Length: 225
Image (cartoon, rainbow, N blue to C red; front, side):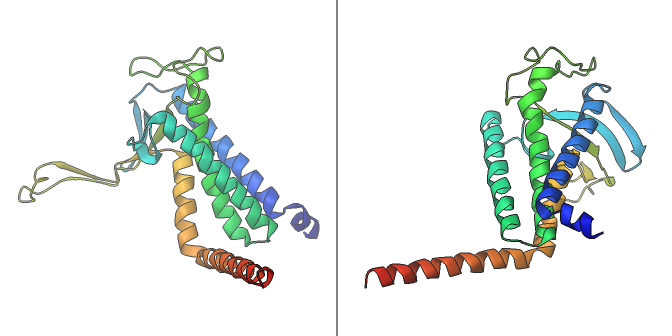
């Protein structure tokens, strides 16, 4: 047990978690993309479907940012959080903090992988035929412009708004309507768990910054006499 603990450092745990999430995420996406037509769905339960869609935007299909800008932004964000994880591991931060941060990085990396390579290695998905692998660089789009594959759909509540409700009266109401993937779920779980269980880590980081800032000011005052 001691050897296991010595081997499984927080840094190695972070790498293993990121690799595991990436592998699971990509296996699911490739299976869906190469076996289902765009818009096809399978009912697993009344409130759970495998529903194949693609999107150009952010998590849960949001599309209010330019695709290329979004891809570059994701790469920058992954790099910054990855650097921050390295700093947390170096100063021996809590394992749970490293775990949740790594979960967010892994999810973001899973989606950026789609954008980077899917347009280069797959034919386009359509409602009429299933996508397939093509020679590298001959796919449906260019580098960083590939579409993100989504498939998990949980319409937990499906009903109709009462007629007396303003604006929405008589319209269909679905909770929960977004379609997402495993990477999106990892990002969401990581963020929620950070907010719920790692407030002390945020406070520690803030207090440390203030301490460093104070020490810098003191040194400056000493130097200036």
